[in-house]
Amino acid sequence: PSHDNTAIQNDTRELMSESAKLEETLRNIKNAIYVYTFPTYYRAGVDGDFDIRWMKIGLTTNNVWQRILDQNRQTSMPEDPIVIRVYHKEGIDLQETVRKIQETLRRVKHEQSSAKNTKAGKEWFATTEDSIDAIAELLGLNIVKFEV
Image (cartoon, rainbow, N blue to C red; front, side):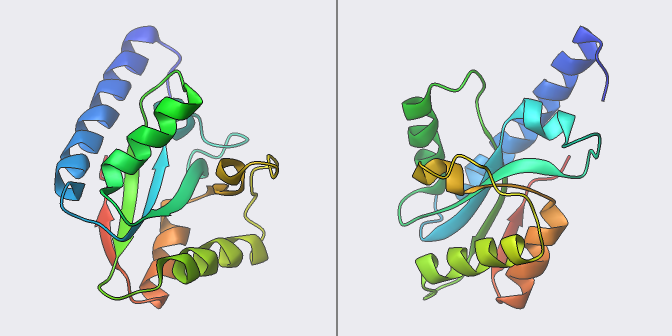
């Protein structure tokens, strides 16, 4: 990651462009588990490891992208979110499935946000896309991916 402002602006445009493509795919997906982050988190990584990023893992029974936008309008974040993954499968118990994903990440020592007094805080993990994908594959979920 570069600290050059032009490079950062170009990276952000590319991230937003890829997210927009995924958002279009998501407009018709309901009953899904979503993973999103912010451009700054995506670029920075955690503790110098650029594969590990803070990502929010949640669920919705409504339109995935609308759920993400609604959450971020409530929290007044300074950046628009970027959707990283959506996991779905007809007939799954969303609450149980997201619980399994999050519990697995905790058990293998992926850091969870310490803001445990809020629901949103509990859904943030320092992890990798591959880690979440591996769990989703074991659970037999369909995966819609963000590609940069």
